[in-house]
Length: 390
Ligand SMILES: Cc1cc2nc3c(=O)[nH]c(=O)nc-3n(C[C@H](O)[C@H](O)[C@H](O)COP(=O)(O)O)c2cc1C
Image (cartoon, rainbow, N blue to C red; front, side):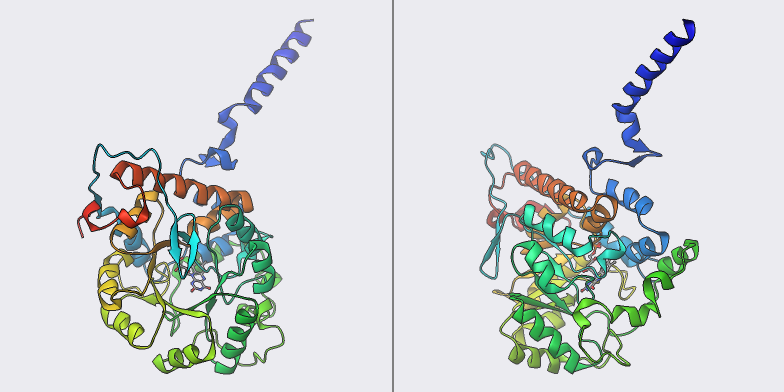
């Protein structure tokens, strides 16, 4: 009798625990998308879900990861100047880029090999982008083809180009992206040489799985076995091309009808050259602190790039954007849109499509709040007068 009562009360206690918020966290890590309070909550959840070697690839910067940290810290030096007593009951967050209107100025950066983070990889991201009406830029080294990702996104995505060391291969990639209907080509120019990704190397040592299970016969070769390289002659190919110059930008302009965006510009001089070479748009980026250890945050580069680019060329920025206020600051300084890399991949790694959707939703909500708090009702109103500290 006594035993039966004890069992019943135990069952009630377990049922209570199952519905309790206590169980939604394990060791301080969220186990349900609904429990995230900000996008950083997804980082710990992704670290738990993704094998250490793959998480190391996502997390790494270069050398001491100081540029990676500078990117994040850079936004905290810019302060807001909110205005009061303005009717902000309705705000319009939409932004137009190359004639297409997007619901928010938040863009998903190219991140390679997303099936290393979740089995549905780029397709889950595309479906989330479709749900949340968010632009996705697809990496050259995507683990799913541009055709399939575009179909899942409900429209052709932007395609990012690494030329590789063969310009013939680059040309074929461009033609394939164009044939898939991609409206914009983003040429990434910040990885001309190798890089020292120490965090990645360190985390690889923690992984007990054999690398060859994913990367047979080697990481270098398996990269060229991805869908975009099907049918191409990839023998002896290197992913990045140290011989690339502005001549190739001119060639690209002639080669394709797609709009040409150059990604990885951080100086006034190069922004001016973009303009002189007829580039249509620029992404201020240091590859999320994964290229050179410059120690310079992208938010610090943004004003001089805008200055060099001059009017009429949309300038986007990425690197360390983790809050809606960061998006607001990017726009206040003159960026057309703010791009995120790691945050949506944390969402992907932890919870697949639902995680990506939640990350986009949270940033969008925070951005809307920042707009209201500052007294701006459309993105056109967001300008220099709303920030200080630059
Ligand atoms: C794991 C990983 C893979 C990336 N792959 C690419 C790529 O294939 N092409 C590219 O142009 N940039 C690539 N990037 C850089 C991102 O597009 C973007 O510039 C950067 O992630 C933005 O910084 P954030 O991660 O702090 O938001 C990659 C970044 C990460 C973290």
